Image (cartoon, rainbow, N blue to C red; front, top):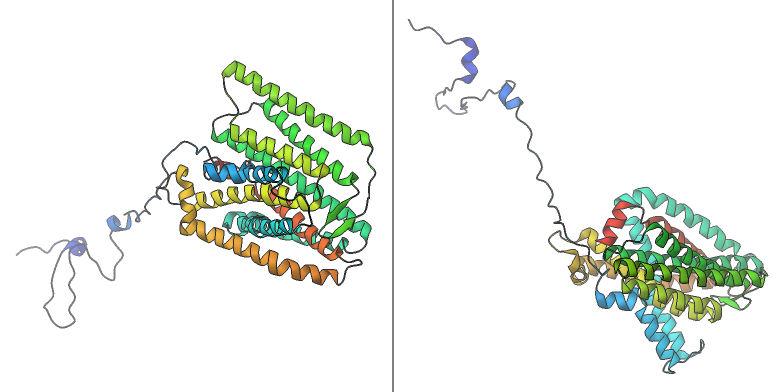
Length: 407
């Protein structure tokens, strides 16, 4: 008589019941109502497919495109505007219809969109929003309080107004300094410690010169409000700052000449053009120009376009397909990723400049101590907050930020 198989082998057998209605077929290796076999339990779970990685490539020598860089980053736009003004094709009169139209155009196309680009940079990225969102919101409250202080009296309006203009020039010079370093990194021209420190000192000498002039000038008008003098700085302070600018400029030039003699390496010419444009135009504006000229030439046609090109390039690099090389980043401007970005910053900037700002200025003026103090308060609050938020998000010490900028 044939012996029965061991009881332990039953789960491994295949058997079939009669094909009655509702019958179930169990194949070998299956065990309904039982735990899976050790072999099945030990099988590793399916692994996710690795994300497609970007192939290694050399850094793109430009931020967005040669034409865009030369016009909007290196100062070409303000050079053209200044040259036409010097030749008499553009009237050098703040009250002329052309200058009024130019200021409105620069405000809508560049100045206000570059404000909204900062907030998009903060809150569009999950990592940035998580780490800096609350900090930026906190400083918004601080800037609102400073704006309120500017509505109390002409003295405090002049203090806050001059602080804002001083931070404006710090903001302009610091960004130009970062642009110079960025072009050097992109083209493999790495400054040594002495060269970088000298350039850093040159930048801050320019900032100190601008700030001392802002606080010593009597004829400054911010958003229609005439600032009263608040500090009488000795002439020696201005003189020392000017000497420092000249001294560090000569020192940096000498270091670049020395490097060329030793290594035949030349600092990238877009970096030189950006640096010269910064000191030539900003140095002239903070000494001799009116507030309107500072707003048009300094912020509207130099700083703001520069900022928009950098932020647009950064935004696209974070989102464009890995199959597109960084040298083709400009081709994505007309793709959905670039068009959506431009549509948002330009649209939000237009609303901010033509709807929100005029309404708030009129509303605040109705509560201010003197006419135009409310407009001055709004200008100071929104710009101070932009300067602080911008300083929080653009740090070249951050590896991810630097890698994306240099790519």
